[in-house]
Length: 121
View 1 (cartoon, rainbow, N blue to C red):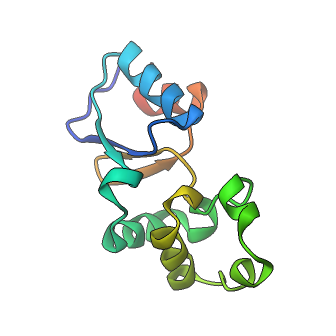
View 2: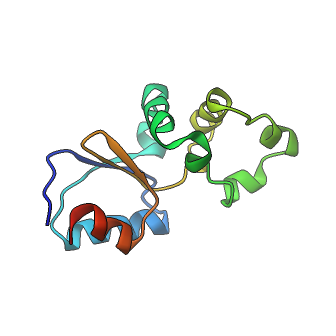
């Protein structure tokens, strides 16, 4: 299994998908620092880095409850990176979770296959 010096997992602790990702990492003895969006906030510079690599469309969870609760006008206002970043800073729960940072590369969401491929498990 590939070891990485820098693993950081971003999300919300009570999110089911985040719990699955944390459990998978623990089961495979991979230590990741956890960043809680609710308690620690969401940094605009960090969001810009992730969006630059993944695209804002991949990072905004349009299937989640937070997005569905937005007004049509709020949804329509998300048209580019800067408007998406502003929404994600205002409403961290709209960020697709988890985001795993591995050596300055970002991986969005969780599946066992995705993590197996990433870590050679």
